[in-house]
Image 1: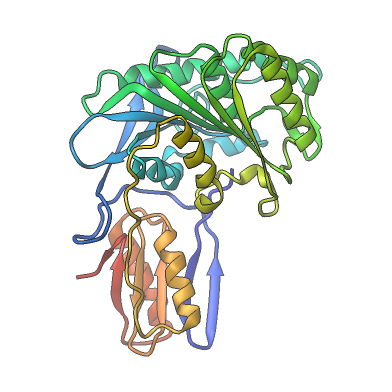
Image 2: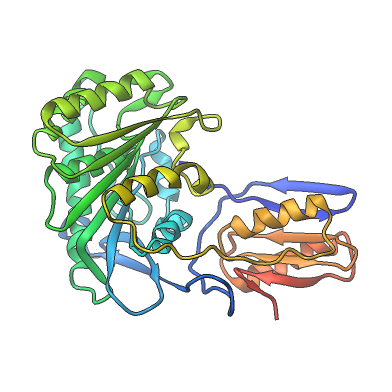
Length: 373
């Protein structure tokens, strides 16, 4: 998955956009905002096979005291092995917060060999001619089980009524988890689940992969939602239907959604900047399963009145981006904003600098999800 963050600055006669890598951070909402506050935490999940450091993880939950059901989020696998090193659990913050809004303790865990989680090629399926998907899946499922075990000792998370969500290889891992369902797993969701895509239209050993889904279906009895987009560049609709049919033939329970085309590649329907596209599928499924707690309201920051139409569009983009972020503004409507910064101070400095290239009267308007003071 690509993690991109938009940076923009504006003068009424000029517009620029850049797209650097974004690192997401936790945040507290503005006093008086119409939303609950959220608590976030960076974690290391203990796991002997991952060595002393354990697995990289990120937790997001409502800030109010209590025990929240776990929503375990599992990531995909880049086609290029070298891209794994740049992954971070925080990059899924925007997804995690959507589940926190719905009353869950959302845990993003990076499996072995991704980001700072040790492991190298531990989850490799071997050669394309003879892929060992079962062996690779066993590694992924073990990592998810370790994350669940770590949550059992917390006083703010419960594994009773928990759900699991996965994308791509993480979707396959989630299906695998249901086949060895831990106590308390109530439902699971797979977006574009699968493994072995080398290029568009080319999947290593697709027959072996379909057979694996059939085998998983023989022991999986957890209600599942599977979503595949029409223009998925990794797993075509025809192949996704083969996975579904094989899984159901084995006895698995699956609600299947043929989603319409999404963007340039529907494989990334489940992403940090596409909540409006995937959330309705999740909500409908969880509602049917009686697993949809009360949804917290969205953050609402008023747009500055002096902004013109382009400025209002930019501010809407700003409010949807990951902290740390800042929006700077001048009386004539000039502005500059930056997001995905290491700290609020960095975001504030960079936003002011962007605005200053258009006006000498810039001031901070908003920092993270609060109005500047």
